[in-house]
Length: 258
Length: 277
Image: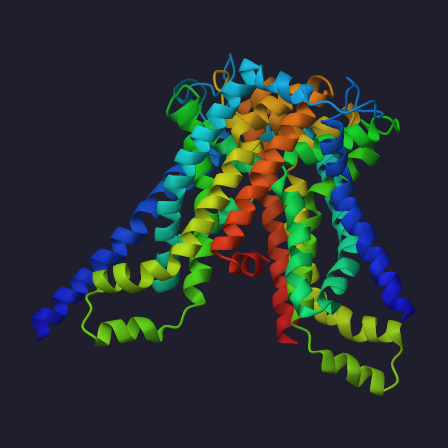
């Protein structure tokens, strides 16, 4: 029994390690002081200041636009890749799909920077960020969709064929409805990845376009201010909502991704 | 009959191409080709105002590599990156193992919630998780130190260790532990002789998932570390964005890629070995 107690103590300590730092960020976003040091009193003025900051609003608008566009395209391409991986196991496709997910982000970032600037001679901006976000999101969607397909009973596709359904009809009436939850979860996942991405965006954004993470980075490089706490809290609320939605649509992604 | 067969065959082949080609082409253009260009760029000369020198004038050279191998600072920083990645992995393992065991020993209906609680901090932006440590360590006078770098690295990567460990431990047959107990094994013996060896594949995949991203990380040392805490990721970032010596940056990226491949290779070889025994 004593071992059980130790285990609980160690486990709770790790949970505390995971949550206390974030709780501190949220707490100080309501603190009526310029310094993130001691509690002075409750205020929401940092949120007000945030909403009056045009740079921040522009960055938020950019992030949202990029996240919607990149996750939509990545969901279409990733679903195709997931189906292809499951059905036909083409050579090379696993390498193309999974490597961008597994390698350190900085490598994808600098190689895309080199590609856009040196080869395409492109002005960095919305397009380069969009292409980069789609590239790292495809793999995540494909993995989720493939997991969904792998969890299904192959007999139903055979039954559809035996009943005379064409491959297209089998897809629209049987396969697609069954993988929809995986597709939705994949979309939400890539949306979250896009809106949160810092490292890759940092290399391909150029000077003209900022996103929320880039804006946060330039703020915390200079100083620690409660405004950052406020934007952090809002972002956390947003991603929490997205995760809750993803879990509602495809509870098994929790287990599959683990 | 044969005619119609071949028509559906053709249809099937067409479908297969139509579904496979778009994502494959996209990834060839935006992942594979840039990766190959990066490899090629490491053998070029730097341009006068950044970028690469024209190929026709300066051609290919080994200068970037010569530079890297001549100056001991690069080997030293690469070694330091490995040390930081190793220490981070070890600390993650020490923190993650008890928690993973705790989750597995909990009643089934509570497990999903406990796993979710591990994933949720992920829901906060990566920079916010680093920023949280700036707030905490600032007043303690630990900010911009190696301690801060390690704390940030562990914090950002911990879930990558917990999840694979949990998935592995969940598959263990409790009868094995009972059998060990019946044979007179104490708590520690049961852990070291049964649970630990069986969990090694989970330990290995968790370690790879922590070690590899830490190896290439630049944001944590940049925000939490001092000037002496730069790692290979910071060197790469500096060459591409500040010094603008792209061939040198590409050469360092290629070395990082080789290091990552070596780590991934070792990890999967070890996993395969264990699978056979």
